[in-house]
Amino acid sequence: MRSLLLALTLSLLSTVSLAAEAADPVKEVMKITEDNWKSNDSDWKFIFDADPLARLFSKRFQAAYAEASKHPAYETENNGPGDPFGYDVVTASQDGCPLQDVTIVPSAPADGKTGVKVTFKQWTCVDDTELKDSLSEVQFDVIDEDGKPVIDDIHRVADGESDSLIEEMQSIAKGE
Image (cartoon, rainbow, N blue to C red; front, side):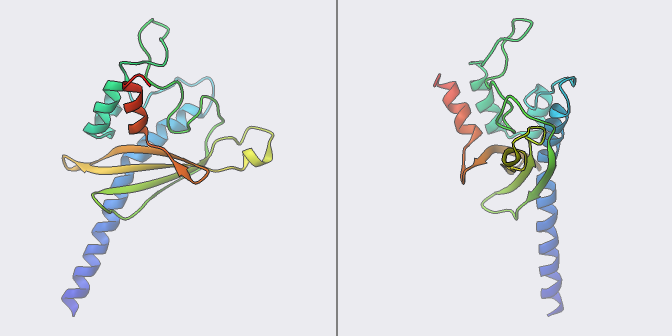
């Protein structure tokens, strides 16, 4: 009986540990996103620059981004291509306020991935009370790849429905 209890306890602790580790790449993406929205004077850091893309995202995600990048949404100041999005993919917007009340909650691993739910207020600087108090939600799919947790997809949730950034990148790559 004692062995069974010990095994169950260790199993539960390893599940909690895996979920906490799964949140690590999401925490880093959210830190970059929060820093980007702190003020208009801050230098924008892209979560899809070479280093964070290689460290924080799955190979499948990287491949989809590489294909979508062949169709940039804009040209940069130095006439180089921008990224395939014309907006911040985490907040799903081009405008916003400093993010507030950010929460990051991993779920238990299931089917080879861990869901990480992120909620935040992104419109706290506007006068519309309903908008100001609204919560934005983003779901991250995190998988284990080469022994480390990486983000495999991002889903923005609105009005009870969610999208897939992987699917959006695949559409962009097709020129849609």
